[in-house]
Length: 361
Image (cartoon, rainbow, N blue to C red):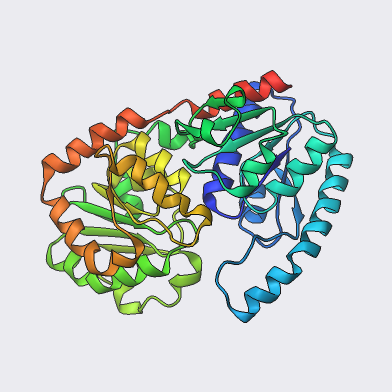
C-alpha cells in the first residue's frame, strides 16, 4: 500500500516506486490511498493503479474565517480518516505500507503501524514535517534524500536513497527534434522554462507577466507552465506571442528538460531531484506556503554549493527578470552550475527504495 499525495511532488515519486515494484515483482498487488479531490485521484488511475480516497486535509495556515472553521473541524476529520484508513487496511491486508507524504500519509501509516504492519517513510525534504517526525517512531525504515537527518530520526532506521524520479527523465535522449517540435520552438535559440510546481504559483505567474515582453525583445524562447487554476486568467494576447509557449500543465517534462537552457522552479523535493539529474542551470523560488518552510531549506542545499540561484518569493517580482537575463548571457555560470548539480544527483534512487521495501517484504 502506498499512501500520500496532494501535489506532483508526492504523486509522481509514488508512481515511480510502484512502477519499479511492479517491474521487479510482476505479481505484486499495489493499492494507493490518496486524498479525495486531490490530483492523485486522477494521476494514479492514469498510471494504471487502483486508488482509494479519504476525506483529509492539512492544517490551514492562513488565518481567514474559512480556514479557522476548517481547522476547528480538523480533529473530527482526522478521526474519520483514521477509521477509513483502518477499514481500507483491513480489506487490502498489505504486507508493507509506504508513506510518501501528503495529507493521508499520516492516518494510513499510523493505523498500519498500530496493526504491526511494517511501514516505510519516504522523506523527500531536507527538513521533515511534524507528521513524519511522529510516524518515524514506529516506522521500520526511513528513506531520505539528504544528509544530517539523524537530528530528527533514529540513525539506525535511516537509509539515504535519494528521491524517486521518472525513468524518462533519467534517460533523456540526445536527439531533441521531437522535444522542440512538441513545444513548436526553434533549436537555434536559447530557451528558458518557468514551472511553478504542478499546481502553479501566483507569485511566479505575476512575475512572468511583468517580464514576458523582455523574452520577445531579447529573442529568448519561453516555456511557461501556469498551473490549471491560473491558466484561464492569462491574457489571450500573451498566449499568441511568438517564441512563447504557455501551458496549464506539462505532461512531457522530459521534453521540457531537453530543450531548456535555464529552468525557473519552486523548490519541492521532486523538482530538486529532477534538476540534479538533468543538470540544467536553475533559479529556485521556494514556496513560502509550506510546512516548516522546507522548500527554502531544500533550495539552500543547492545554492550553498553553487548548484542553483535562490530568490525569495517576496523578491521574485523585483529580481526574476534581471537574474534570468544575466544568467543566460553568462555561459560559464550555467556550465559551472550544471557540474555542481551532477555531483548531487542520485539517478538510481527508485531502485534503492524498492530494495528497502523488498527487505520488509
